[in-house]
Length: 509
Image 1 (cartoon, rainbow, N blue to C red):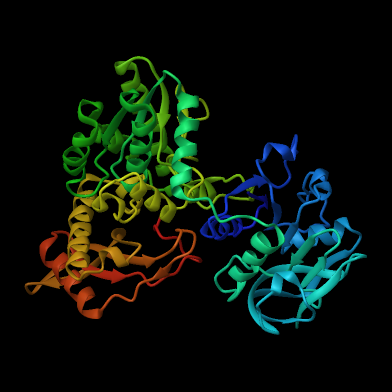
Image 2 (image 1 turned 90 degrees about the horizontal axis):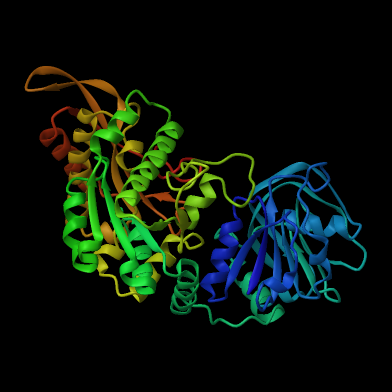
């Protein structure tokens, strides 16, 4: 395995993702946390020091456990990670007069194992305000840019390497080749980590964790909870009980679909509870998105606690939490501020009666889909577009009301229908409708109207961490707009969101 020590970079998860894509197992560990023994990481081949938001010379800068420098295995520092290497080995890092964010061109100065197979100049992605001003003794410079004369360094004797740029980001055109050179040529890793092996290991781990206990599954019916449930069912069988909460914030007909599909798999171990009034009453008057998410998270747990009491002897709660949920909520990164609290992470109460089981917690969405296929889950479930745990509450901007939810559900259903008819559903990462908290003047049948605005959102992404808006055909947008305005009472205007992530997020709240 390769261990990534995380110092708070927004790109840390991408490092792990790129390594896993090469079928090499990888774990992320808090960069500044003391490690009892590196031997606890099985078959450790190399360590990557991630980027970070701090400056290595600042008083509170995160530093790795001193043991990392004495492991005798390859170390690769990226951005902040390279600056840590420089400072530790008596180099020097200072604020740069010209910060470097975005695309840059580096010139490779000398032969280096990291750059095997690359040209003399490479396009890379920079994101830093500090840079090396003095190279540590025993290290040589292997690349430079106009702004960073020491853009890459190495010490072959110590097997330590560093780059100022981010090879994990797709904008670094040969970044993946650099990572491959490190994990295979330098570290000697083998490409033998697959979803098949993950299932074997995870099922074994879950059996050991659960024992004879019973598990309640929070079954939304989406990709993540479905995969988590089927994996647990494979591990512990009828010790698993699935509870689907009809909270009124799902898409049109969602509860009926869950009943139809999953009763065939879990039989009487699928329980559906109606909590529409509970959730809507808790959301009444709330406008702030973070409050919405946290209230929804707390209410979910209350419902599951209540159901577990009825069932008796429930020890564990299974959730389909995936890695982007963790990263954006508070993350093991220790970053300065969360992007948003996901209902199943940052929205959970501090004290819970049931112990959490989250078998997908460190998997990306596309890895979850691959896992689902390995488990034999039907295509119509696995290939569903992502749907947020808090549901339409975070697509209903402003206060959530019955009236606005009804308008949104019908509008969203039209978006789905037309995207599917156009043959684009499986080609788009996510497409949906949002109801805005404003009304605009319109004219229908020669009469003035004052009604809601619906925004359409369609994005493509690999991992939900970055996303590009989809250039939907104008004819399709026109058809969606026409249908919504004509068929959904209460809407007189439709707009299209053309924002990427970042700076926007995929969801509006």
